Image (cartoon, rainbow, N blue to C red; front, side):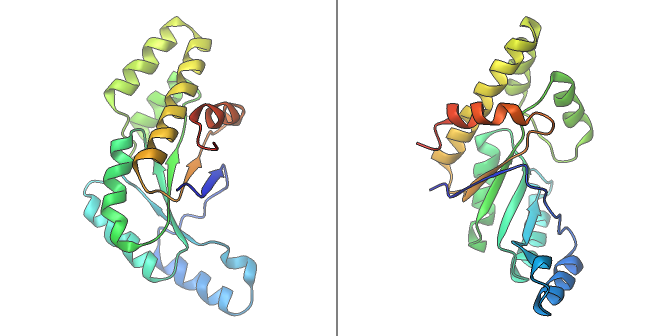
Length: 182
């Protein structure tokens, strides 16, 4: 059952175990604002995934409240990651980031480590863009609504982290079309 939808909340990236230890000490001294919902950021498409899982495991042992992933672009990516971390018994928020434009998609594929866009999805969005910006927008909304719906239906994620950088206006449409609030 989906319990959280997190929309564009800045993530503190505890990529360093030392960061979590220091922050826990600060919180233990009464500075409550220092440690609100510590999370373990994760790269579900890391290669090798086993090394990424070991890092996450160390963070879970330090007491993170949940795991938040980098963007996934297929249900298979989400399923594979959820199986790999299931033994940690820690809630997972899967990251989803619709593309503002074809240029953004190209940039993320080329320059953001760990981003894996399935070729079929990439081609689908490129074909839509050939018809115009409005067609790209409509296809984008439908693709990501379907992705949200399918991740909810086929995995046991605790929630989704929607990251629409500079593109927040599409989120209500994506959420509504996904049907996840029904």
